[in-house]
Length: 91
Image (tube, rainbow, N blue to C red; front, side, top):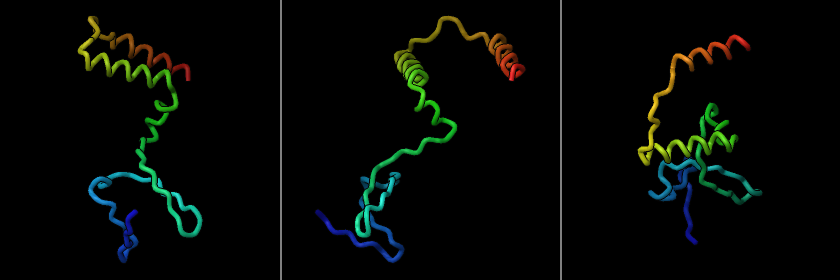
């Protein structure tokens, strides 16, 4: 166990290992804090982490790309655009 002293602004230096890390700070009672390393996910991307099927599909695609397994036929962007317009019209 080590002792750290907060500076005049309430900061404590945890060393280089924790530099530029994000923490969740939970106050437990009057004299205790719990620190947990965290990652921040942009709101617009949070759905992916809540949808296991979509997340696995993305991870599978990344593994395929890393293995250089690409589609032999490119996507049909014209058909895709038509689908987007159809969906937008139905809303």
